[in-house]
Image (cartoon, rainbow, N blue to C red; front, side):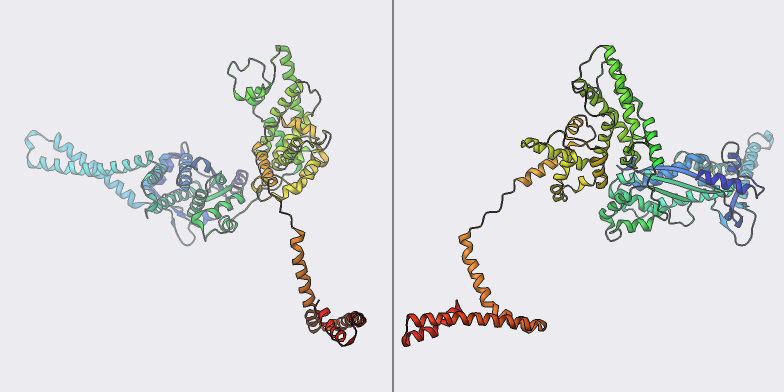
Length: 631
């Protein structure tokens, strides 16, 4: 924006004869003269000017997060920034004697108009003051003793009155300017906020609106005076770390400041849209207005700009800068010699000295030199374009710095473990890869480590050469069943496909290497593992379903079979009536079943005739078909 402003300034000065006026140094007296005696006029020439000057003001919402009215801090920061940039005296004079810029129709090239009332009023006060002083002089010492009397008393009365009135008028003007000089707009707004029950006062927002309009008119005056356009750029940061009600207040303040179409304000919201949308949706006073936070943001933000994904060169450059600008105090702490920090052993020194025996000075110096070499080797792997590790580092600059600050401590602790007897173990490249793994996928890494720990406790631990990815893959279905319980923790992880490629191909950590690096890990929250262990233990304590008794289920099964056999004829009839295209098949099946039943019945009749004989046997034979049909 500064480059654009400089380019426009140079292009504009090539076509015009005038030059911009200064508002600092020797330009302040001229500015005060214009403020008192002249009134600006908005002309077509001014509206056509393309040269612009940007005034940048940063507002950190986190600094005002504890206040009841965060938006009041936004307004006060804006007023204080403009007051500090242009000085307190010009703004105080404009607050007392300044006049709002006027607008004239038609083509008018004259941008200033003499304020005749102010000039005449000031001349009248000065004339009255001079007349009063002269009359007092004549009444007190300018006449001879012989000419005293009523005329001298009259001169004294008129001289005193003229001096008092004119002097009081000038003193009031000076007092008003001094009051605005020492009592800024920020103090006024803070005084309004500190009042009890200010939120219920109907005139509170009106007073704030007046202060903002006064500030806008002052900037418009400066635009015409400097012969350039002015834009106040307010950068709002830290808004996604505040309470939802505070966020709503800031957005309402922005809408209030931008309600005027001619307001020279540009707001840059440096926020995470997902967090801001959630705050708007959860705010109690936004029900019905911002049920969808994204739609509300679309109505507020007129130029959305999402930072694009970093390219390879950009990411490597950012990583290189983060490595070069790492904290020197931390670097000296991890590579310091014994006694360099005196006798005050802090927590960081105690952490780095865990299970370490302090040897001679030469040996410790050699150990520190080796640690520095390993740290440099590990950090170089982050921004080495020949290595694939930078692909797994996120585009977030804060995450980059967190990884860079964690690598030295991890490498130092790993070196101390290797001094205890394990001279092999992971390399510095594996150490920095482990730091990236714990930073990018804390939930999935914690799950793999928890499953490994549970298998060790039950005596079925895998071999040390087994891959950590295999352990995770074997228990991934169980993690999928816990998605609802671990939703907030799973949101911390990055891309799952990159996690598979990281552990499965590029960095296939073994179980032994994971156990070694776990003792040096400082950027993995162990509470995630404890939570997973508790959820897994509770799911394992669920009682199994009671077994079913076959004897108890047999009668119910027979009853269902009889019901089905009784319902089959009606079912076939309904099927024949409802499905005409299958009528032939159903009829053929019915004839086959009827012929089978008739054969069975005939054999039953013959058997009963043979056994019984006579009329009684015939009666029994006639009754047998119905009985068999019932069965």
